[in-house]
Length: 215
Image 1 (tube, rainbow, N blue to C red):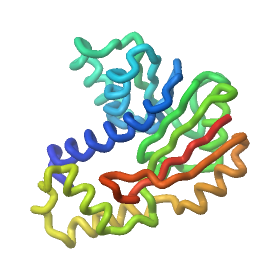
Image 2 (cartoon, rainbow, N blue to C red; image 1 turned 120 degrees about the vertical axis):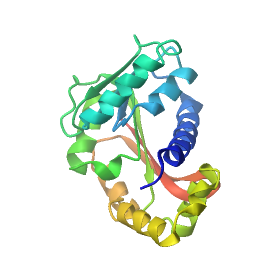
Image 3 (cartoon, rainbow, N blue to C red; image 1 turned 135 degrees about the vertical axis):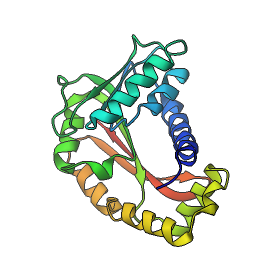
Image 4 (tube, rainbow, N blue to C red; image 1 turned 30 degrees about the vertical axis):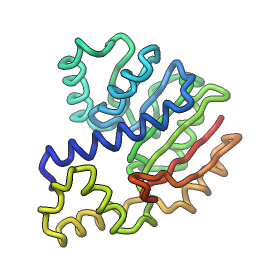
């Protein structure tokens, strides 16, 4: 729906904001990004923590092909020995138990086909003491806050779109977002020893949540 340049501006701003948050307390050696899409978040991650081993997984073969194309294109500025992308399903992750120090997920939780199984798989592949950080848009966020944030991130290019079209797009997406009370309930019964759900502010607006899980 949006021109690719506008989406690229929004995507870049979002991923850079999330990476800054992840790296505030980064002691991980092996990190898994679930629902990695085109892999951009991990490219930003490697610039910040070049010593880490980063794995991205996504159910979409098209997205993984794109991520691997980026890996070839930017091979002069990334260490491809510490960065890889693969096709895989969140409900059956192709990794052994206790593999990762940290798991992250950005704007993917509302796509998980079975949230209970997904949380169980995240728990399984994390090492004891490992952390999962999951970011997604709040179903409870106001249209005005999300719309204004996207406008600012796209250098106000979105203002040229018809308001009714933008509202329709946002309504279709928000229908799939997971209510915060359900996220909390899932976290409570997923086997993790600690969980915390907080509001994640973008441009000082409460449009996302951040779920911390500790195994």
